[in-house]
Image (tube, rainbow, N blue to C red; front, side):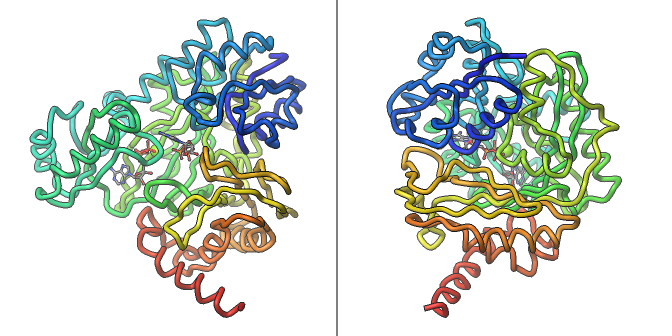
Length: 460
Ligand code: ADP
Ligand code: ADP
Ligand code: MG
């Protein structure tokens, strides 16, 4: 097992990895930007090393600085967390070429899956259902129009390099296809430096369902069940749960089998997620594979009792998975809420700033993952996600009730957060009944904001 690893990340996921390493007797070197010198993980890591200024491009995305720091501090491995360089094949390659172990899949696997259009082609070849759409990259808007006519509107034009919900546009009829193409291309060019696009039929009001995979270096591949991540705002996840109550037993078995087939197709190693959309007839289609630990991995841990970060580290060190598929038993229901420092009333604009006081909820079945502490500062330079609350209870409604309590208890002073917005969601009738899909937040946000204003008005 490794003696010392570098964490090339920040915030709650850095804390998550540090805690895991402490438990495993592994020393940690945290790479920090100048902005994060006093962060919570900086205080918990065995060592910290400053890798550059606040701007992520000069620090958390600064590959030479990270690799130099890892080598100079005597690390044997690098954990990339999520976001930043976690799906950057060149970084994974540079890490290995410098004699360090990358805690994740190989550069080739990241490259193969990171190009979403080639991943799609590969899945199709291996009999995993994909959304009807283009074969390969679109040459131009005229080709987009041709494919759209063939598969039928509405369609989604998507960046092959896309991530974080960016670089995709819908076209509901032929009058919208050119604009969709142009806008998706411009956004992809700006965000990923790659404007290549492909096209999928837009599955109307689907569920986003994804399957957690783990594979070791000796070819064992298991799934840890699925998550429903349909509660999204602008294609970005806000609430995730496990299991997906909408699935029948048969659908769950089929979906998990398809995900394992997808992972086996690339001989996948480490933690990964196969994402699908599920339509209203119960058909599911592969959309992409994420070759890293995900924000929402915690709900799977809560229902399986398996520590995904620990497995990632064990796998990277060459050990076999610590369990078999038949050992994976799901218990109860878990829900995660992402607490963001943002103002729902101002179009969810980020609200960074000093946090003089925080109080985290607790109790039976309540887990908080966060790098907040009283007296910390939420930086304007990075993602606004400040904490995750994860609850687990015997059933979905019990879990919702527990989440209400936890949200009620959580206090973050000094900055505006989406806590109240999430709290009201936990009382939404349709959410409670499981009547939700990826269109839910788009449809109901205005109404919930109105409740929010009314409830505040009454309190005053
Ligand atoms: P998931 O939530 O399923 O783990 P996300 O796509 O939301 O996956 O990515 C995880 C984190 O990485 C988020 O905090 C998000 O802000 C960040 N992230 C993902 N893709 C990008 C990107 N292309 N640019 C900047 N940040 C990204
Ligand atoms: P990213 O790499 O940005 O995560 P995804 O391909 O996973 O991109 O898509 C993000 C979200 O967009 C999905 O979670 C889903 O809600 C929606 N989406 C993607 N493809 C489709 C599709 N073909 N039909 C309907 N919704 C889709
Ligand atoms: Mg995705």
